[in-house]
Amino acid sequence: MADLLAHYYPIEIDYSMSVEEKVPHMVEWWTRAHDSLVQQRIRKDQLAQAVRDSGAMLREGYKTFFDVLQQNCVPLLIFSAGIGDILEEVIREHGVFHPNVRIFSNYMDYDQHGVAFAFKGELIHTFNKREGALQNTHQFVHDRTNVLLLGDSLGDLNMADGVKDLHDILRIGYLNDKVEERREAYVSSYDIVLEKDETLDVPNAILNYITAGN
Image 1 (cartoon, rainbow, N blue to C red):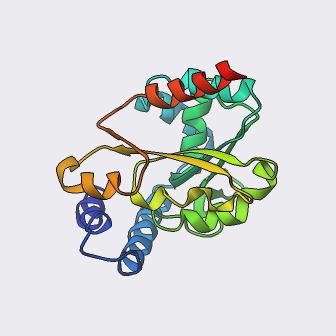
Image 2 (spheres, rainbow, N blue to C red; image 1 turned 90 degrees about the vertical axis):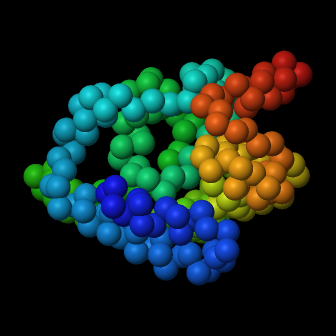
């Protein structure tokens, strides 16, 4: 996995390449990574313990963020190019997997013994989350016209494309690494750019302002 990251991640963030040029490399990266995971014969009944042992964390302020959205009946849609099974366990472990949360990600498929042998459905990578948004969001946001979008890559900018009759969208971009090289592209694409910010302080302040007004 480390070798794959070292090879493909520079391609993902290479601004001399178009998205169209990057996509075949991303498909190859995710396919090879998923093949490697399947070879480990991961057991479904071990996932929860593995997540607990991993120390995986959510951003500081996550509980307020998840709880405020739940209390105000706002759908929280998470599009992830990672592993949906793991993401679900992380959110569940932190006690915020509320009924308003929906995750669209890569999910493992298990045999009759509960051992992962493949991945389900279409592959989701950094640059095709838009397709997932278009296909999957309408039933959850059919009466919603405003969106708060949080992303940490330029591939996340179109995740709200599945929302019809969109009135307002505020895009917040988390710029985590290679800040100097990537700042200009993020500032020109996102409404707000947070550099090396591991918290949800800004989104929570926005939610607090909105809910206080209601």
